[in-house]
Length: 237
Image 1 (cartoon, rainbow, N blue to C red):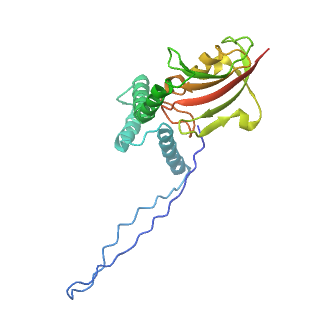
Image 2: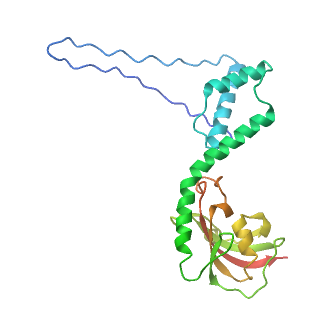
Image 3: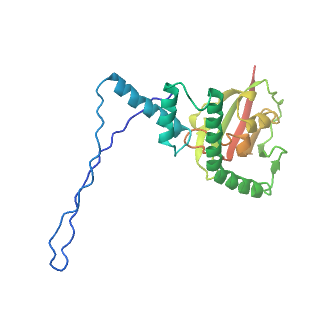
């Protein structure tokens, strides 16, 4: 689990004054009720608060923005009393289904934009579309052999989003990458086995052949269509 960084906020309360109207006396607005301060008296209190932060951080990482706090508390109390309303399998299924549903909703817009882009892109000269939905354009045709799924290859690549943002590039780092053909995203696995060594292709990878509804890191959002320029330098023996 990632480390949790707790950022403490400072709440500032102000008292406003109503303007005097028709010689009525000026009255002060009622101050807002003070927020109760949480005092952690012992290690159990600290542990309990930290556990709450851990739960909140888990849901944040999964993209869940709303949760019924009352039911979370009930589940804790039910488990403590030995009377949970779900077993472990049911609870896991509920969590997985909801997280997938939430991610799917977030991915929908990016998927739609990707589909529109690919529909127009396949009309461009030199762009080939495979049955899987993968599109590619040959920038340089190599004369070497084609790697198998079980091979390890050396490549140079630049990956970008539809808006042109470069999220990763071995070219910029100045160092090729050695990878297993079957150890990358599906779009790469399919393309690499079609490329003779020495080739350089531009790949247009729909989300279902990339990172799907999960996304990857901060840059690659759920449902993103990706563009890669890939140069197959060699098959590593």
